[in-house]
Image 1 (cartoon, each protein chain N blue to C red):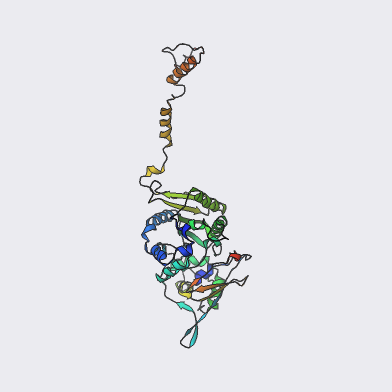
Image 2: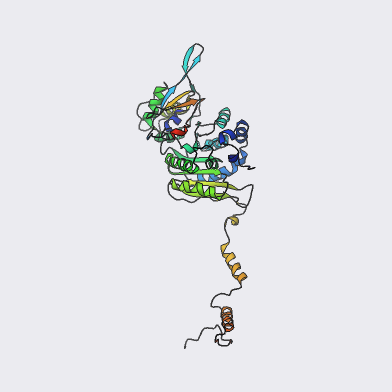
Length: 134
Length: 271
């Protein structure tokens, strides 16, 4: 699951949940040799400055920053959105890295209101609800 | 026995590995139709950013997405998701149930595409499933996660006209404008149903494809003329009509003046 996806996901489909945003991220650990490492994949994705510049106004910046910080990949991203981001290529590249290149492979998403866990397996969040939750 | 997959098994059973592979490999099936519809849309709208799509023809939409520099997919079934994962489609994947609603925040997407998924919602696979409620839940949550002036195109296989009616009523109830476009309506094989929905007020629907363009127009005018001839009635107030009427009244035994060369002519101005 990319952080762009996380920025859009809510749990408002749950019964009794009104906002359900932002979802918390809990990353599970995998063992690398004898160490434990967070199950996060960082891969390279082609950079498209136009796409990033267009997607930024649609993002909830505070949510993105918090999510990036909670999984430890915030880098040099500022806590508040800068003014002229369309022309700032360096800034767009940083946003691109956080949005599209960092992927959570295994873990859980947490509903902020009910505390319900949505498991992430192989990078795919499972948003299926049980019958009594609809 | 019915040949419709919805009648055989619920989607999570029907789309097993072989079936999923079949659909993700044979992209040519739906490619042309969808592409044409996209082009129509592309011409009419500025751009779409993201598609919410169902499980089929993954790489097809990814290709389209790349041409429109969009990278985002939403997939719904585990088996197809796994196949999609192996094939490394662009974008990101989510497992969900269309009938339980779209788990997205409001106004996120600028477009939605789906191939052959909508008809599954018309079936109740579990005791708790109510097709009407599931359809409404799907459309209403989709409406809220689309931005204004967004579009959604669904290619689907309706079982009968009631099913089309059911789907379109729920879509309009949820706030969408739009309707059903049928490509090649006279062909059994090439016939394709598309539900085209719009959020920001009524707009022109894309034109349906057909072999020759006149097929889509019903020739009402010429048919009316033909009907008239077939019935054998004359144009009202014409000379033939007057003669016929006089004849009819004569048969009824009424007093009718004799026919002459002046019958059906205008009176002169002095009278």
